[in-house]
Length: 392
Image (cartoon, rainbow, N blue to C red):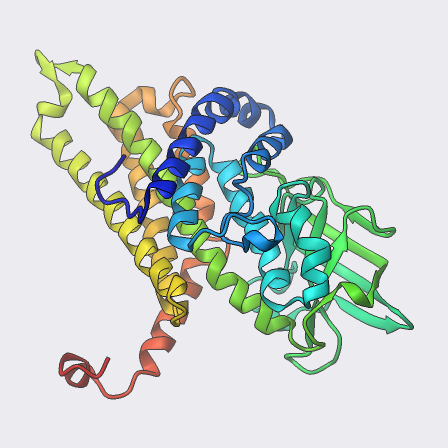
């Protein structure tokens, strides 16, 4: 276990060990076949759910694991190191439950959360639209009140687990105000809800990504989460947490690539010695290690702020930016370490590189993360001298 892991008690150590065992036995052996054939790994989620790994940061009262985000994210990293597609869907499943757990009524939480956090139901998250990716307030999907129901009309793009999830957390417009957006929990079998054919992606072939279409989908008002007009607030709060999940996935993917590259460099010889003994390769590996360790430290630091109930939005964006940019670099360098073999499917590093690219894009592109970070800096009182003098 990496020395820089932060595991506050023996239960957390056991949890990480359990996760590693499940990943090694149940996920990694079938990952390459599923990715090669674009097969959705439903059994993997059943296995994780049965082990209690799909609701870790939520209250034990509702069947969750009662774990801190610091611990939960390290579990996500372990899952992603074995299979990035499953790591991404695990993060999105947790994201899909955030609104209900944080803004739902006691009655809603009691009725719906146990099956979700217990892994009986797999969740997905519908925010982006074909014309409104980085600007959720520009969405056009509408929810029109009709008696005791809402009627949803529109389309949601880039839905992770789209067409395979059991329920969808959906943001839809309930008024013409820019912030007039509300949040709904929509069951997959709802009449009028359909999924387009999955996107043909560069990577993450085991994770279905589809546009979800809402053609007069009737949703009971009891499935609205929070008040009308509170959806954008819920969405943005959810994204802060979701960005930490993607940061952990990126670190897991980078760690897996580094592990393969390091093992190869120790056994592959050139000029009579293992190639790790050549300075050019050893320095490259050192940079890869530094990138993985620093990215992990970044998401753990943000998680500790969240666990302490302190603002962490900017730190979540920093973690997502650092972790995903570093993952792209580390996976690319892993291909380089393996040379020609790295470009073939005989080794998994080419898949890691393809998987890592989208992590710089979803949950807000890294350009959006820079916008969040810079705006947070602009709101700070004083300038550099004030900060240096201790204004924080």
